[in-house]
Image (cartoon, rainbow, N blue to C red; front, side):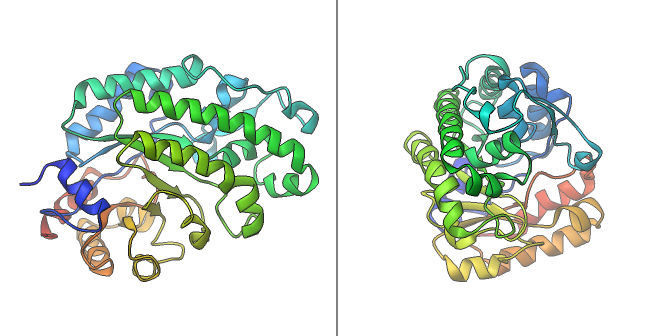
Length: 334
């Protein structure tokens, strides 16, 4: 029987060990504000299901803003998945952006998250690889300038926005370096602005990809298992191929490209997903979960694949369906 690391490394190289890796992740609203309670729920989730890796979540992109004086809460809009929205902050316009300075990530909310990672590492040791979460600077900036307003601000205040992105990038880089020191296998890099519905490819390259690459190049130097998450509808998949990471996760069941199309367009990628979160994992039967998992395995050609969902799963996802997903990979022999 292969080890968890063997399975992951085989998938990262475009192959398969004894079976594909499988893992899911979710938000932990309320428990994720203190290191001890956050580590406790993450570890209990791992003990319950024996995933091949642990992805330690944070509350949302809002996590990165708390130490700049922003406040967040779980809103009705976010209740289904457990994330949070910004509800107040010290920034009201471009004149305020320059007041933000790079953070000391060993203190405050960032420091508490790092403490959680160290607690997770203490229990998992080398048996279970874990990833920690950071968000791209542009999605953090989008919460500063006004949700879904970043493209407009890039056109109206390009120099001021780039100065803000520089401050955020320095902070995320520092957090990534500290996160890797906890013993993490790598970074789960969550995007939120890599979509055609927000701005053009040229704008994304200038105001996001250029900053993202600096963070990901550092992650690749420090970790052996790094993953890109393309959050939202209509991701800029062709542009995202310029990232120096080849392990991709997105909501493949609800937005293009499909797993089969992604495999055809970029056969070198390691694809993570295959299960639809709402209609199947949350509201479907165990039999539907199994069928969709096996269909995903066939769509990618059985190699370079990890079974998961397209994003964080709803907190009310049944144990029955998660166990069905866990059993499904046993049917996917290498």
